[in-house]
Image (spheres, one colour):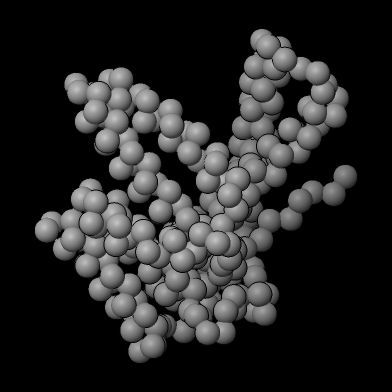
Length: 236
């Protein structure tokens, strides 16, 4: 039986995601926006911050937001019931849910198209230390692997036992999640051994794109100005 190959080398042709936008600019801009939104509370600041996600909402899959807001609904109800005042807890929960939705839309719309290769190039452009770059890529691959195994397990359960319900359904789900976590843990150990067999972090390709130019820094500055405007509206 053949063993899976583990590598972090990306063909140079797959590293360039966009010819007009540096992936490092995309990553840095998304992080600046997420930081600005995470500290915003006032209605005027949240209204200003909603401009960017509203522009990107058209291409965002609605099913992702539906799943996200199911968890947000549970969070809002929990805060409302456990807060000293029901209305204050409900209002706080709504603010947090709005922040989460805006950050999710922006990060998904900006970072998802980059893929693993684009993220690696972005980290290279930001001069992130090589060890952290490799760890980030390994984490991304681990997340993708976990998702693939989960989807495969769901399909297998639906084909083999389409009529599951009640307590048995919960038991099957628990066993399925335990199996996925064990398999993912074994795969992570194999990836760690692959790093060691290649001589550590220095054994991986550490090349990347050049540093950001003046145009890139101008784009980042524009995002920073937008973030500052959100912060000022929050303090006003």
